[in-house]
Image (cartoon, rainbow, N blue to C red):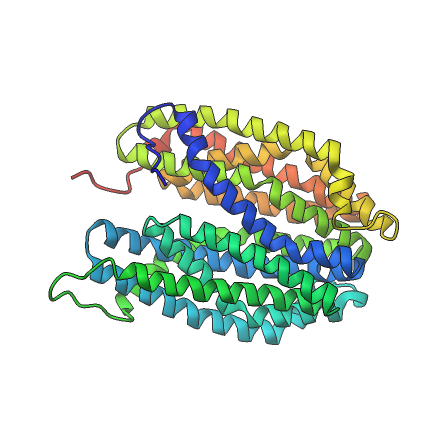
Length: 451
């Protein structure tokens, strides 16, 4: 795959070319995550969909921990590779894999022991409680595979092998769909079947990823006398300093969604089923927005490193055009086809309440996806510049608004207060980040010293 030159040419074109592979990869990731809900909703029933939906917010927290950890682990690998210190690069990879394997095992034990108590605390409806517990118990047993796959994907990206995680994700997604359908339709295993299928697909992908990585690492011979260790405590400390902020950043929104779901759970399993279906659709719709924001982040970092803040501003202005294009496209699709999209999860006849909830959620939110896009690209500039303090504050404000508005207004307005709060949070986040962008202080931030 040809590398995109972020330092030359039309900024908008560079951003689009760079963002498209990430959009494709993230869409497959979302497709992978939503398969369980889609299949149980159509072939098992509304309660099964609600049970998987009740589990989703909790599993997302652990997914974000894995992704954040992977982002942190890849930094040292990239730096050692760039410096040509292949022995230390391999040591950093091995240290990260061992560290996160141990962490994933500890989180597995925690999840298996505590998930019933967590579901109780979230007011999970009684009629779906047992299925939700069963799904999570199986899911947590596969947590080491989930962690290993995400860490390995980050390592591949650090090595410049971004096509490998994409191809493995496509393979894993297809395998997950096949296994889900077989377990649910042929074996009639219900919620347990989709959980087992997901763990199995993740496990196969993680094992294949690990084998490929070992082969790729052989291409980087160490210098004579350079020592390679399986574990280095100094690198563990360095990696932890990088990974912890990444994990916190990735987990904030997921924790917020977990807190909001406790409000939704109080309206019963039918409303939860519709909310879960709409939430999965929302997660797909924000993919191009987040990917464009990540592209802006990389664009900013490279151009500031080259001493070209004016080009960053050109790219930022161009990115608004991309966001508006995606926002209009999503709005048109959702308003024209929302009933068909929701019916893929929920039967309009047998699950009328769930169907109505999902439709109201997606049609309302369809008009506001530009806000998360504006937030993503503005956050991307600040993140790429390394000016993360205001960026973190803005995201915390977003979280606080969504959680507080949902809790305070739902008793008055009903469950729709939950999705009314979403654009309120996005808008506040954008305004805070944009006001800081206007100060221009981000352009004077220096993370590296010029040689």
